[in-house]
Image (tube, rainbow, N blue to C red; front, side):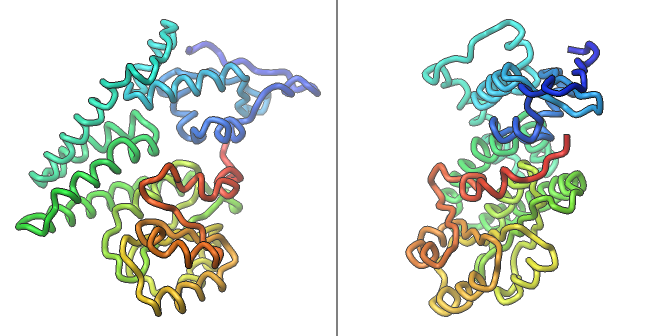
Length: 320
């Protein structure tokens, strides 16, 4: 995997059957940053190169990427996938994936134990290990989303529950915030897709919103995270100054009639970019929001931010 990269001749038609990294990312759902990491850090891919150094992928590369993704989604760390591919071991059928859930159960148990001990170093260990070995969407789906459900069931307003919740939220805000900062620095193109993330009025928890922003950033978007406390009336101003391509609003609470019927609908009418409402609010107010032109991201379904605005995210310029 360390041989000199194949360089294709710069002649008409020579690269016709090859795909650029942006198209491969669209076909496989794996963002360009991850594809480069699989190539450089783990030696999993060996794309061809144009004389100018741009990566080009064949159909066989696409099949390899999908095989890698299958293994990762079954709980195999990316550092171990290369050996499986070299040994030509077939990806097991779904019935053989019991142990994969066990891997994520272990991660979840370690993370919750560290949280209850308010041990930031142990939280860092689980967070950094999973984020370095798996795509962000996999970590969100297999670790954080089920863990949030477990914690919310356990948190009953008893002594120490609020402390754990705030400790976790502050931890995620700093770690994800750093990842957003680094990702945004790599997305310097002026026409890059920008998505703004805010909570709706009355929502105090930012954890799901943080995960949505992390997912968007992992797909090449510039995630402008504003969090809580921004008045609805100021959202169009923020969207204009940040030049975003979409706005994501999150809440798990019902909105009062004035906020919904007057303020939020007015924001939707003012903005010229897609507005996505996520969380339980999207489910509660779906019958009002959808006819008004809002996109709704329903919790507890197979919907993702990418599936709600696929055209927006698939057109994100990705660096080669």
